[in-house]
Length: 258
Picture: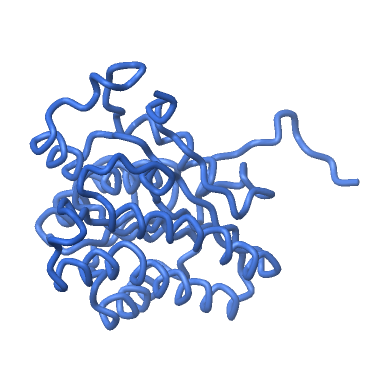
């Protein structure tokens, strides 16, 4: 029997290379800073290059290691190219956080085909392609890895507030987590997810503008702060979750219990 320290837990990500999508704002920005602070070399990705550069400066000023790489999750060549670029700059990607996502913010029957494609591509198709490309390289290198898919409590609940397609894609992301975990367990690749409730972000700001202060209907009357997801993210990305795969953790501050 192996001997384990007491307690057997570590959030040390030294030597790991993390690729985080959608780091130009909100949860993704926070996630990138947290992983860098835990010792990982982090690839910052997104479409707004000036924001990537600003974040890179902050992380380096705090002693972290990172590289900024533009990424459009609706463009297959961009998705495949970002993995190449990160590997050349930092090494094999061992941690992938599929965070990038966009809302629909329209009733289903009023959505344009362009918006439908953009939501599917950004929230589900893109993460699938990226996950498979990262996994392919990990398997070839015979290295273990961690993947965290950022779903949403909307994958499980729907209030009829013009987020039908968003909910469908986030539900698909949760199911993707479960099935890829089974496929890749034999290779030591853990695939898990986080389903946040209402947390502060650009997307949430837009919802609040459209709907007013929705927090009044929550048991704790508040919108979550991205920092309150730090512990869940680190758990799923680190050695602490070695035996956890195929799980989506709901972090919604009791909002879905109302």
